[in-house]
Length: 204
Image: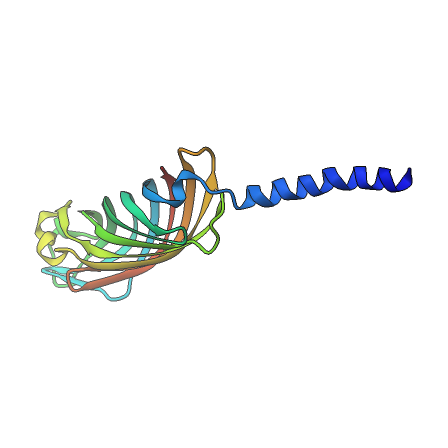
């Protein structure tokens, strides 16, 4: 009788362990074929590595904001490639040289709007319903507009690279939430900036 009771208790326990184990590795529709990751908000804290020289002074970058979308394809359950495009709004401060006496050229903030176009590579260590992914983005971001039109020739865009890690939080078979933390280095003309970014995306 005691042996029967032990077996009766052991069976539900094994069943529960099996369900939990399978649930951790349950595949969703996102582990094969085409997918999209849209990031409506990525905060960027970017510092100037060198000082950008302008006609009448220099500029130092400090922060930015980006939104982008990536269309990708799973080569296999652990690796995907994609193509991304977005809009980037970068902020910098302009410092006129001491030789400039014009009051209209006093130190002030300005911004650049860029169009990042990039290749996206992602590695998924575990093919699980929720899990970590590591990413590499590399591309080019031409400048579309500057708040000070005289600065555009000096910030005519440049290449960039982003290295980071993200986590996929499964919500439904249709989409997941994907927060990410990244390191980014970017060129604006002859000027280099680098820093960190924090993004929040949706994976479909």
